[in-house]
Amino acid sequence: MEHMKKNQQSEILSILPDIFPENWAHSYGQDHYGIWQGIFVNKIEIRFRWIPPREFMMGSPEDEPERYDDEGPLHRVAFEKGFWLGETACTQELWQAVTGKNPSIFEKEGPEHPVENVSWDDANAFIDRLNSLVSGLGARLPSEAEWEYACRAGTDTPFWFGRELTPDKANYAGTRPYNKGPKGEYRQKTVPVKFFEQNPWGLYQMHGNVWEWCQDRWHDNYNGAPDDGSAWEDGDTNSRVCRGGSWVAYGRALRSACRRSRPHADLNAGSGLRLARGPQDRSGSGTGWSPGKGARDERKKGSNNARPAP
Image 1 (cartoon, rainbow, N blue to C red):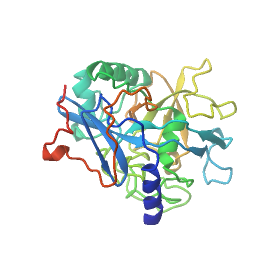
Image 2 (image 1 turned 180 degrees about the vertical axis):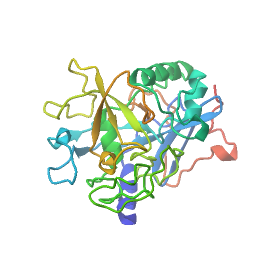
Image 3 (image 1 turned 120 degrees about the horizontal axis):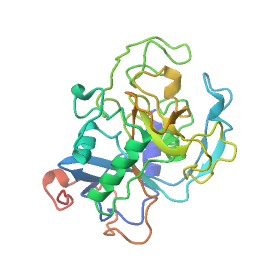
Image 4 (image 1 turned 45 degrees about the vertical axis):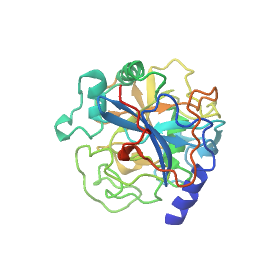
C-alpha cells in the first residue's frame, strides 16, 4: 500500500497545471500528496487538490462482488486537462459562512462535520453564492466521471484502499458489511470531514459519511456516456447522480463505482456535496508561480503566500 501511494504521489507531481497559484487563491502549497489552493470565507478555509489529467476505466467489472448493473459497461474515460477538487466534503461551517444558515440534521455534532440535508438545487444555489463572494473561483459540482476518477486515485479495486471495508476506514452502517466481511461499528451519524485517512491524491472520505451530488443527470447505464470526463447532461429525467455512500449506507454502496439516483430536490441526512473547479484555465489567469521539488505551504509562517480573506 505504501509503495503504491508513493508511486501515485510521484505521478501526480509529474503533470502540473500551467498556472499555479491562480488569482482566486487565498492560500496555496505543496505536500507529499501534491499541490493545493485554498480560499477563505469569513475565516473558514476550503482547499482544492490538483487532480492530474490521465485516463481510467470507469464503472465496475462484472465479477466485482455486490456490484449493481447500472455500473456498466466498464469504459475508458480520458481527461485532456486536469481539474481541482475539494480536499473534503463541504462542511457545515463553510455552508453557514456562505449562506448564513445550517440545514444539517447533525448540526449539534459540530461545524467540521459535512453539511447534509441539502438538495442538488440547494448545492447549486450555494455554489452560485460562493462564486459571487470569491472573484474568479468558478466553483461547480464535479461530473460523475471526475468524482470516480478522483476517488480511485489510480486504483482499480472496489475502494481506493483495497478490496476490504471496515469501519476504521470509512463511516457507514458497519452492521451491513461488504462482501461477507466482518460486522463492525455503526455510528448512526456523520463524523468530521477529516476523520479518516486521505487517499493518494490527498482527498478525505471519498467513501462514506455523506453521498456527494454530481452535476450529471441520471442514466441507467453508461451506454452513450461521454468519454472525456464531462458531465452527462442529456436526457429528460429530473434525477441527478450521487456518489460515495453515507453514514447510513450498506458497505457495498461505498465502492468507488457505486452510483445512486436522487430527485434534484431531494432532502435527506445522507446527502452533501464536494466542490470542484476547472479544468485548469490555460489563458494565463494565475501568477505563474511554478511549484518545485520540496515546495511547502509557508502560509502558517505568515508569508505572502496567504492572501487576505475577502
